[in-house]
Structures are given as structure tokens and as C-alpha cells.
Length: 153
View 1 (cartoon, rainbow, N blue to C red):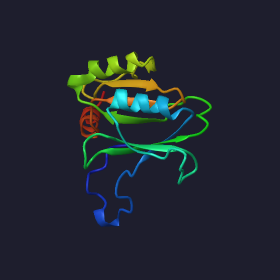
View 2 (tube, helix red, strand yellow):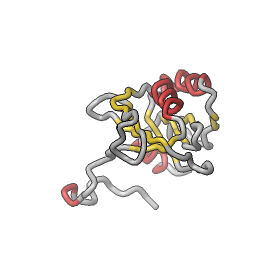
View 3 (cartoon, rainbow, N blue to C red):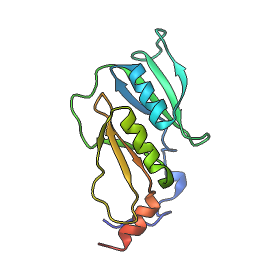
View 4 (cartoon, rainbow, N blue to C red):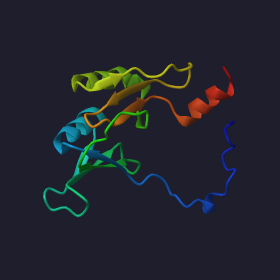
């Protein structure tokens, strides 16, 4: 399938206004906080403690700079039973690729080599947390990828 031209659908008809938040169910809130803060520079903005408003104890984090920061919620519960390629990718600058790779290694996380890529589509660091969630730290953008793919193999 070829990339669609931007603006092919009128903006006012869109119901979704963007990403609200991402929620991860984890066995150990402290362990996940260590990963989010240590690898992704997340800032904790809420901790329910035992005073829960939702299904279980939870913590909220912001990743990135406001107003474009991503809200990440972590809730206590049973982890995913197995791993898959379903993942969340966070943008990182290419100039800091090695630094982020070292951060992931320093936490003893299961680092996966990125898939084979064509030049110009960006680089990726993939790792699983202790609850089978797959994270990607990616240096490219959608625009970069679409431009590269338009050139063909």
C-alpha cells in the first residue's frame, strides 16, 4: 500500500485528537518506575499509594517535554503471559543513540537487536521489561521512513 497524501481527509471529521495516555500493567510498580525514570527520563507526577481511584494501585509519569509529553500510566497487576512484537516506540535523537543503549544495558534489561533496516529509516534500540512489554527507542520519524520507502528497494 502506498502512503496516502496528507490532508486527504478533512481534519474536522477526525474524532481522535491524539494520544491521551499509555497504560502498562506491571507486577512491581517500583521496578517499572526505575526503568521509566532511568531509561526514558520520565517524571513521576502521581502515585496513588493505597488510595486507589482505579482498578489497582497506579502511578503516572510524563515522558518528554510539555506540552508534548507522553502520559504513561502503570498499574499493579499480572504481567503479560508472553512476549510479542506489539510495542511502544519513543523518539530519541540519533546523537544520543549510544547513551540510551548504555542506559538499557545498565538496567540488565533484555536488549533485542533491531530488525534489519534500510539506510535512512532510523535506528532502534528494542528491549523487554520484566513484564514482557516491548519498548523501542527510535531515531527516525514517519516522514523519514515514508521518504525512504518512496525510493523503493
